[in-house]
Image 1 (cartoon, rainbow, N blue to C red):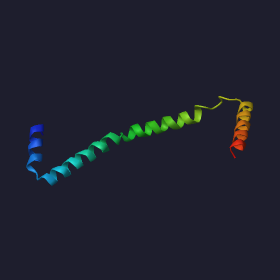
Image 2: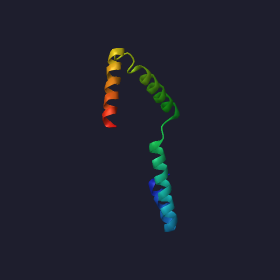
Image 3: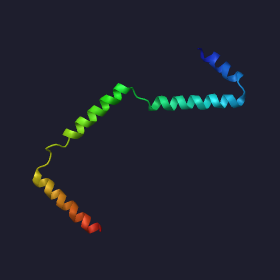
Image 4: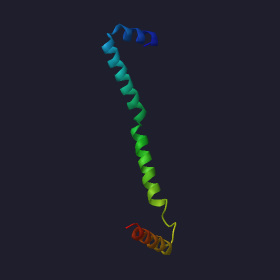
Length: 80
């Protein structure tokens, strides 16, 4: 459908229906912006789960982890 034909059909509508058409077009545009292909969403979720499992794995030693945990306990005690 050409743009001119589209506009002429909208102009033929009463004003209250033109507003409804505009609202519907805005709804469709917002839905399209938020929409991602299902396969792309699955791939993103797979990549995120792989990264979250391995991204920090083995980065600090158990001793360092204990030191950080102790520091957090001390900070928590100061805040209360």
